[in-house]
Length: 213
Image 1: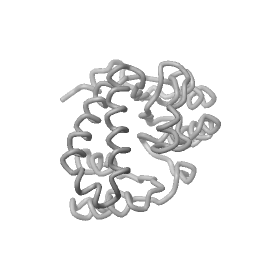
Image 2: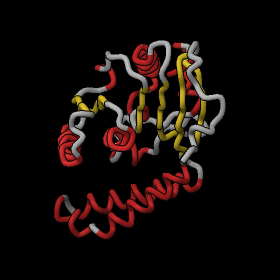
Image 3: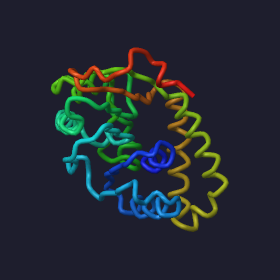
Image 4: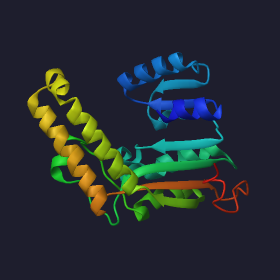
């Protein structure tokens, strides 16, 4: 998990919000094994429970599930958390133009999810005077990630079928292969948007700090 990576490699203190109890149990055990339990606090709650100030606000793979009607609420919470300084990042699957997931994915994999366009994502930032500092598209990275996941899935497919059933295995295989194709062909995008409060001057002048070794 990103929270463990940040705490382990950058020495920061992290409060991580998640609504999956299984993921939280796994993450807490990993933090204990890694000896960084004192640096990371895992909270079983969604983003609406965030009330503290922080230096950095990071959302990964969540915007797709927030719903466009709640983008302003997410922006308000991020703005409040960052105060007059600090920086935020939102990482989300998206589209080049507004269009929902296909019916199969919406029904069987991500019920209620929606991949926004960049224009739709601006509804998070504009109402709260949050300045967009950088936008990066990682779709080819994610296509490769999905191909790697599919390869590992196939290596463990017999175990997966025993844990669930053959229908589940076929469904998950189709999801991974179809998603890899969607990111490869540009049907889906993977946006990372870096932002900060509009009045903050505590921001880099160039991209050099992003890519330093």
